[in-house]
Length: 191
Figure 1 (cartoon, one colour):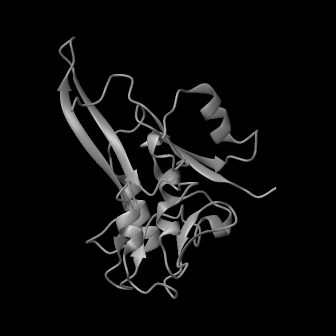
Figure 2 (cartoon, one colour):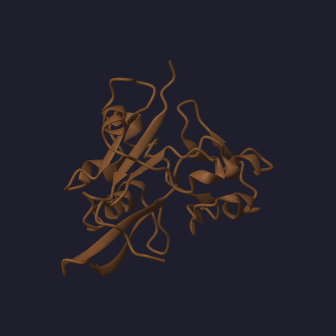
Figure 3 (cartoon, rainbow, N blue to C red):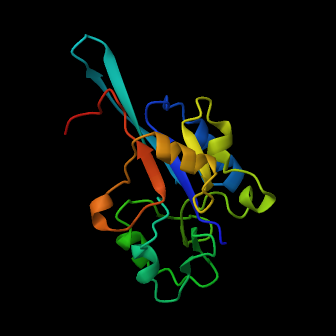
């Protein structure tokens, strides 16, 4: 059976330390002016008991199953590989940037070196190729990130999905993200 990778970001465990962002940059040689992964800090919000609450929101590619970025690519440079990871073949890219415009998660950017769109790919060419978890997962000091094969019923990710309430970003769009969020129990920032 083919693997189907997914990730969970637990907002209750995340402390916004940016270790994931730094590890991603280092592992994937991401230029300083762009990012594949960012953790946005929202807050502080004063709670009824007088304490302050922060919410930490991960912004990265959510690895959609129904991929707007892939469907608009005229050269098939944006594609989904055999284990469900949305990827970019820079050799096929003509720089039209349709994929960037189509992404409802604002998860793509133009790499200033290759001049092609880039995004998180769960470290598929580096760490996953060596049988390791993505860099962001391995450095998280609070274990706020869970990664694994969603097609394996005994995987850690499926155990967490079965035990905690989760949501998918912008689920109403029908893109079926494979990045799940365990929402902050203390409440985020009101819009």
